[in-house]
Length: 236
Image 1 (cartoon, rainbow, N blue to C red):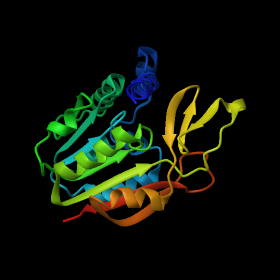
Image 2 (tube, rainbow, N blue to C red):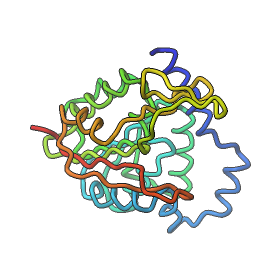
Image 3 (cartoon, rainbow, N blue to C red):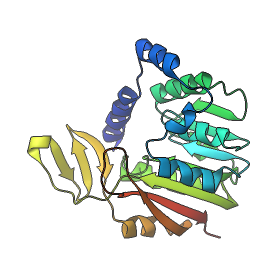
Image 4 (tube, rainbow, N blue to C red):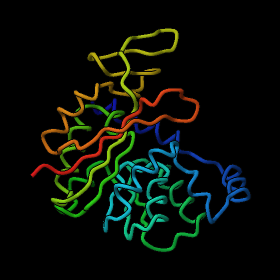
C-alpha cells in the first residue's frame, strides 16, 4: 500500500504543475471579476457545492487540487474555507489562483501531511467537500479519510463527496490498463481509480453518514452524466 500511495501522489504532483509561461498567459487572459465561475470542470458540480455549502460558516475542502471549489465558495459568500492537499504543486497552483482573483480574506490554501486530518479537532467543520480523492487512493487510505471526515464534522454538517463514474473493471493491455484486487484500475502501474457502484459506496458511507441524495454530472466532452456527487449528513 505504501508504494502504491507514494506513486499516486507523485503522479498527482506532476499533474498539478503549472509552468511560469502558462501562469503569465493565464493572468493576461483572466477576467478577475467573473473568471472564477469557469474554474470548475462542471457547472453542475459547482452549482451543487454552492447550494449545499456556501451558507456554511467553516468549510473544509480536503484534497482540494488547484483549489477551484474554495474559490467558488469564497466568491459565493462562504465566510471561511480551508483548502488542503498533500500534493505540494496543487497548493502552489491553488495559491496562484487565489492571488490571481485578488482574494484577501476568508480562504486559506494549505499544504499538509497525509496525517494532518487525523489531528484536526473533532467537530470543527460544518461543511466538507472532497472531490476525486477517495476513489483514486488505496482502500486503506480512503477508509481513513472517510472516518476522519466524520470525526471533524459537526453534528449538523453537510458532506459533499464527488467522484468518478463506475466502470466495469477489465484489464486492457493496449491502454496499459491493469486491474488488481477486483476493482483497482492501474494505468502504467499507477493507481488511477477504485471502481465501485453507487450501492457499494453508499454501504461504505453508511457507517458514518446518511446519504441524502446522489446527483450526476459530466466533464466537458462527456455525453452522459455518470460522475457522482454524494450529498450527505453526519449520522448521529
